[in-house]
Image 1 (cartoon, helix red, strand yellow):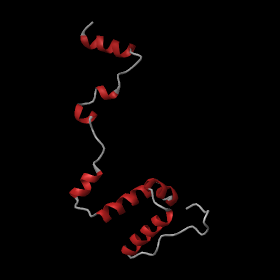
Image 2 (cartoon, one colour):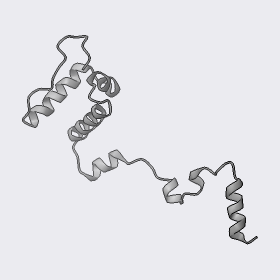
Image 3 (cartoon, one colour):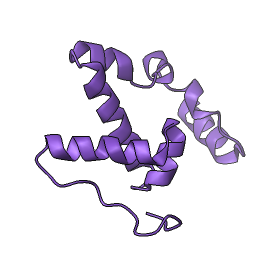
Image 4 (cartoon, helix red, strand yellow):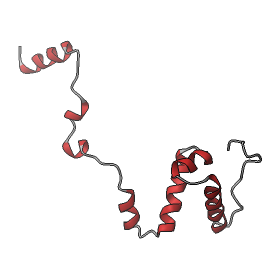
Length: 106
């Protein structure tokens, strides 16, 4: 049996495979999440721009649910609505839609 045949036999009889990370190159295994703040500094963003982008990303991550987004951001829901209204006005749009009753979910 040559080495190729031996390898085939080993693969065919192996019940478990090594963790994928052990076969990946080090530069792939050590991949770190994107540096959001470093990117903001490189883009020369103001604090207001950074805050707006962060709020918009959290709101998107919460599928548009403003109540959950506000909780996650540590803001009162009214404060989040006020900020969204300010962003809409700056973009030349109307105010952000609000629930019609206090208990209504967005």
